Image (cartoon, rainbow, N blue to C red; front, side):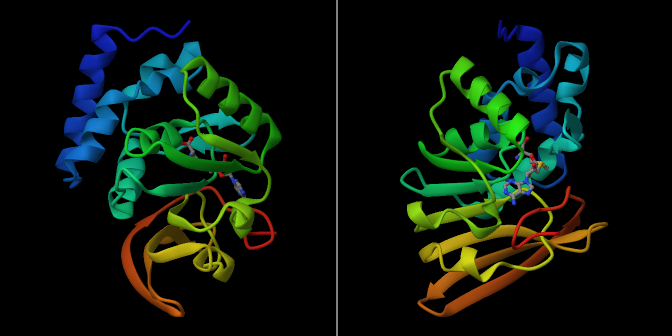
Length: 216
Ligand code: SAM
């Protein structure tokens, strides 16, 4: 059963303060972080870890991202309430749930079958209705494109051109790119049909993006 107590809410407020002190300013993002019970995405034995600003194993060699990283990527996306958003790397479903606080139009794709089914069940338990997909998201979701925002939550070796082509005009892709040890966060905005603005941000360490446009 999913229970969100005053103690959890208090711990969440503490987490929001930590993330705010690290530089996250967007009130809507901070509010989303305060609203979503991160402990719902943890096994019972690890509930205490849910409100630390740390990544944590979710099985299958994957992790739920650090709250600061989730807030950082979400802030860069500048989500508007009408935006259609694609998340690549559903993982636990936590980041997707944060996105759902900002827009109801969220598509999320996961490569790992076990995690896909687990996240799908979690969304059902929480009464959430993102569009969930199982498969290689490194090539996006062409049949549902275009998207106003695309978020990659795993470290990519390159910026896949196929993802850029799935952005609307004015759309943004947020993606960590680098080697498997360290990645730089990039934000690419489609400013014209074949014109893209590329911005660079801080370094992060993500699990690798797999699939055709990812690590082999
Ligand atoms: N967003 C997740 C969350 O909130 O828990 C954390 C994501 S975890 C850091 C990265 C996820 O990307 C893993 O679940 C991994 O299986 C998934 N992944 C890796 N390559 C992928 C691909 N090509 N397509 C879709 N998902 C992929």
